[in-house]
Length: 377
Image 1: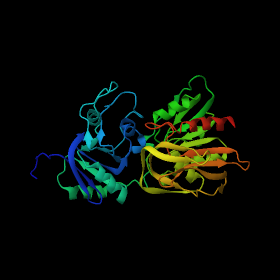
Image 2: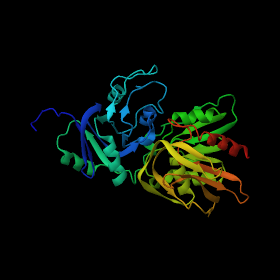
Image 3: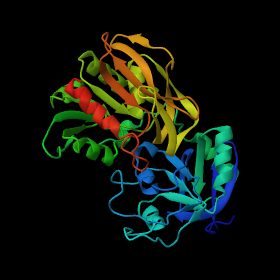
Image 4: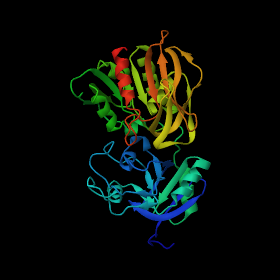
């Protein structure tokens, strides 16, 4: 290629050399990350703005994306967090009364490099068979092998401690609605705004703390409970948050964690975590609550899981822990419960997203369970 010549189209190159060609979508340029696929048929704005997708290139399995545009109400944070975006058939003209601008325009405005016209069905099947892997999208490169070499030089998700990169830089307060019933310290590891609203709607005064908060920071708000949010990265690399959680459990403060907060809860209780082959991402994952026997359709975004025995309880320094939820697709641990010697619930967590942004509302009862826990019921 001669110097200064323009590159036509865009390409996606996986670390194993598999290459897909398409057209630029969103910002033009080059980006790197971990290639993962999301199975939701809707809710792409919530996906894009979920901090848990930091350093990931999201492949949408739904073939037609962007038809409802972008509005000013559905964002889960102040920016788009995905490193790159892959779609098959983009809607060039949105059709929704709530739309303020097109998805393509929003991606360009925020500098998010994407690619369209890709056979996302073939790409998804490849990731299912080979596992999530590093990837690049480029609309400026013309040599797939040279781009692949840069992919191999990029960072891996395993071993990455990323929560502080997406967390709030300073504490802030979300007031309780309808009168304060409880005060909760929320450790922001990649918090979604709907979670704070769901807590506040139940009369919880929400004190959001940075990911690197200390026990002194937590105790300073005199919390009735502590909550760890979702977030990106490898839970095995987040040693500071695990130590904080152990200190919380030692003091008997009620705890509720979701997603990354579930993985850190598992590590605080002495379990290991491991990287899933391709993870769970989407709004249609079936999970069984082993406490009630109920099956829920739930919203997921996780690439790691807790390695805990499903059929037996485990004694820990903080009490007896058991697996409370399992995924019906593959048996992955989706929740943990910690009880005292009398069988009373002390702390619990789930791997999925009960705030359902975006997704079904089957699991919203977990916020009520947290309130009952803080009441001492």
